[in-house]
Image (cartoon, rainbow, N blue to C red; front, top):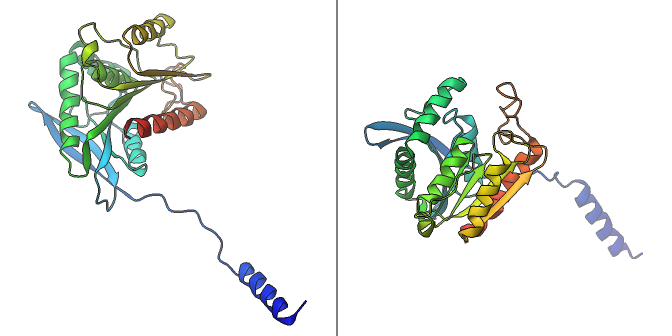
Length: 267
């Protein structure tokens, strides 16, 4: 080997040996804060998360909490969505950002919304107005996701004709649009369901799918084997009910499916 070639090889090998180790890229920076807003005389407190130092308008996502109230699960989801480049707003359906660990109290709060669907849509609509008015948001590209109680609220938002690109229900109860609502449905629908969820009957699933087909709506239904109710929430340990428990594989797979769905709907 010529001396010049040997020197070059030694230089390259030496350079590789002394190169600094490759480090993983830091997660995208986000900013997050609570935001107070109103529906009538009721003060609501949501949690806003968005990419930091952004100079462009972003698609946006409403996040609706479980029946326990706005808390770590829905707020954390909003922050993860912000890392994906969305402006996300974890909404408050009960007022004052209330949350509880008491199932009786949660049932009362959620029941008040279920008994008065118009109230639920006013509360969600107030959050939607706040989100759309933000300068960082592309108001023409908004979706809504929700968990359990919030998943049902998300479906009802679609049936009510809210101007949304898509809605995603994670382990929510399944509702269907009334005949008079069908012409006004704008949103594509994704349902992520625990295949062993004891709170959602086979009859409900059949009725939902039949309605989607007969009304020719844009829908997708994914059932995850081994998953029960609340499968996305790491805090769900089965102590409240064995049929409500975190399942990490189903949680990860359903999140990835949601990512694909939102990317497609926000094109």
